[in-house]
Length: 283
Image 1: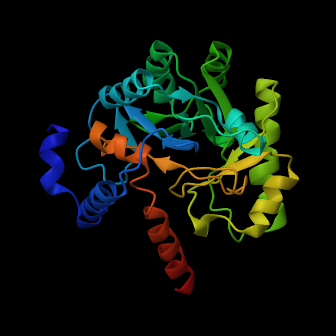
Image 2: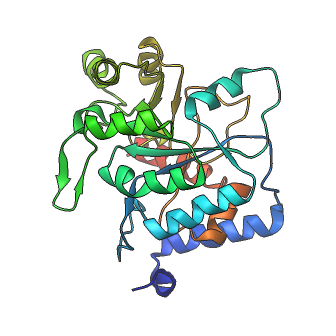
């Protein structure tokens, strides 16, 4: 079934979010070229559309190519998250239309499907690896990158790699020893396997309820220069380097919706994420 035929079947929450973002877009009239850095986060880049995939974890290869072509043809410059962190601490103004493309977990389809497209359009990306998943299979239809794949991606100059913990646990509430393993051990494995510095981190899950002050202190203590959430919004010089924002992209982001993301019409969603996280804590 084609994506356009799924619109009337969207769950209520997703339909409301898209509707609210359309209203936000109508009234805000934000330009796309604002001087902040938007960071997009993908997971699986699939061979085709997956009907009923409501977790928003997949993006069909054809749609991913349309999104990347849009960036390339509309003056966007893709930068690594390391570059973004350095730009955010400089005194100079943030250049317009800088975007970070990131992938979480480290799926093999990032190599098979996303890599050729990024190379085709001369774009850069960062993969946040779950170090303990490398070389494993998730299930019958999905597997993770091998260290050999990672080496080839690094050498291409297209990809940079950051850390996404050892085993993708919710880090909030973990004790010091568990945090050391999830953060410090993961970083050491990646450094040993790649021979390069690993300076950037992305919190598993990434909502407010998945990291806390203790987690941030542990990440900072392991020598990371910055850390990324999955909280919607753009990053400016006022953004905490250990609470940097990212926006999830999936099969729901046809080009018209993709443009809204770049204009900031989905930024309001961070308020919902905050309230939802607070409600979970109360329970």
